[in-house]
Image (tube, rainbow, N blue to C red):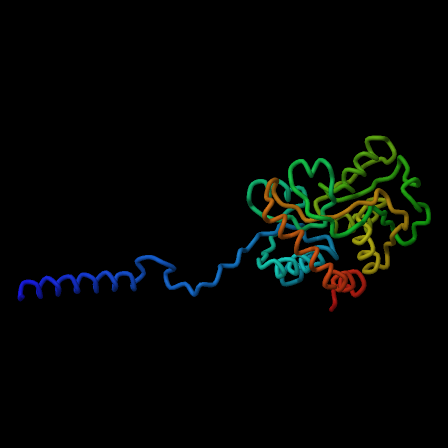
Length: 266
């Protein structure tokens, strides 16, 4: 009996040791509370395109795109962090895995759709022309002449448009710059005769600057959408589902009013 008792004691000690090791993190959920970790996606933008995308004095990226994507993320249970890129670097950055989502008022275009997947459209726009407030000559794109310089942002449909105007001899020079703010400054300084820009963005600059005005004629109406890397069906489905929900529950309309009527104020 003494030998049997000793053997049982040794076995009990061994079992206790195994239990202690397991309690110290030898496997399982390692003390996790059981809550799922929230997925964080990186959204790339070009934040000089108010009211869609801009930067505060403190360096925070804000705008209609940010608020809308944040609402979609909340609805779908993920989070978003924003990173600034030049506009023409957004698609390459997505392809390289440096960002997951493009949130930059990007127009749906066939050539872009070959390399990224677009969400359902979230805004309809079109190209318009900005000129100096005292310019009574340019009333539509048909008034642009071969002696004029016209600016637009690089990598945009507006940039492609003015370059085509120059190639066709309809304007003297297409001035294609990295940022919309630079285009506006060129116009204010008299270095260009006009700027071609998205209609909502033109409205913003028209309201903010007394020395420029928007021409009412709209060129090539287009749709804007978020974009993800080609084949990222899971993320695209989340964005589309969230977008549908925020449109249904009134969040979308509230954000449109905030950014396009109230200048970003609640």
